[in-house]
Amino acid sequence: MKALVFRGVNDVHVDEVPRPHAGVGEAVIRVTLTTICGTDLHIVRGEYLVRPGLIIGHEPVGVIVELGPGVTGVQAGDRVLVGAITPCGQCRACLSGHQAQCGHGAGYEAIGGWRFGNTINGAQAEYLLVPYAQANLAKIPDELTDEQVVLLADIASTGLAGAESGGVRIGDAVVVFAQGPIGLSATAGAKLMGASLVIGVDTDANRLQMARRMGADVTLDYKEVDVVNEVKRLTDGGADVSIEALGTQETFEEALRCLRPGGTLSSLGVYSGKLQIPYEAFAAGIGDHHIVTTLCPGGKERMRRLMEVVRRGRVDFTPLLTHRFSLTEIAQAYQLFGERLDGVIKVAIRP
Ligand SMILES: NC(=O)c1ccc[n+]([C@@H]2O[C@H](COP(=O)([O-])OP(=O)(O)OC[C@H]3O[C@@H](n4cnc5c(N)ncnc54)[C@H](O)[C@@H]3O)[C@@H](O)[C@H]2O)c1
Ligand SMILES: [Zn+2]
Ligand SMILES: [Zn+2]
Image (cartoon, helix red, strand yellow):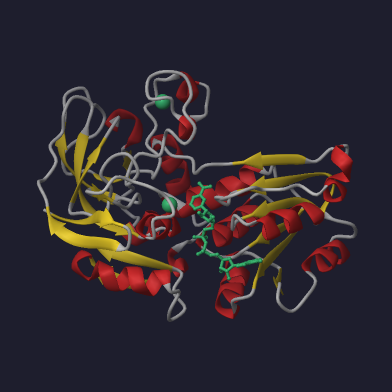
């Protein structure tokens, strides 16, 4: 089969590799649609380490072609969505509701639920081996297209979870820092959760426009305005929930400075280096602030719920799919997505 193989830093190539086969508890799907994540860019650039030879990508939609012994409730030919995070469903973390921190059969392991394109072969390929298939194959309702569900595997699940983890309540004022694919999904999540005011922050005019389409009432260009003062003015003293969707000191700190006492900072960004909390932004540690972090929720029940939200017309992520490529053209897709050319937000890749 054809697959995008990570050979080394800045060296990925569509190679001919052996097709996987399903063992006990596993499934193989023929991938019908996938996409590229910002995290894949970090991998290709050598900023997040994976082993050379690994097939990357973690956002699969496909059709079941093989089921190993022990997998029930689905059959060959079923269309399925598989989350970017594939919990085992059996360990202490999974059974305690922390599937993303799946402990691989034992206790907890930080980020342990993220396997595709990280510790095992991923989705930018013609076929994909799905581990713990019983916990991870979510049947796609007939009326939903591949394009309607592909972003639910990762960015939509993550962004919506940013609002859920933030505990957004009806009537809350929410500010979302960065309007990349994750931030845009968080903006949609804040609206879905019942925020009365959603403020989207970025500088890219195209993304700010998309933010309004996804549910932002107000957008702020951080290069044009003092975001902290403006959020405090718009919210009469501070946001109830700040969602950080970039992963930098600057946005983390601004998200904290925008919060009212007792507010929640819901952080989605992936950080590097040291993250500092200035004491005055934190009311010296006694402002009743909450800081929560979230890794993309996965597993078949999460995917089922998100597909229902889409099927019932509550939210539509297809506007984020701005460009389409075949798997053989994926190098072009990486270039476009990586350099953020031509107003790209997400690319659809059809193997
Ligand atoms: N928590 C998770 O499970 C999870 C999953 C996937 C990705 N991530 C992380 O989420 C983050 C965002 O990913 P993405 O793909 O949406 O990002 P992206 O790189 O596509 O977009 C980032 C956006 O941030 C904007 N920006 C830059 N500086 C800014 C500032 N100071 N204030 C406001 N906006 C600013 C840019 O204009 C751009 O639109 C990354 O750290 C990524 O690694 C987390
Ligand atoms: Zn991702
Ligand atoms: Zn587990």
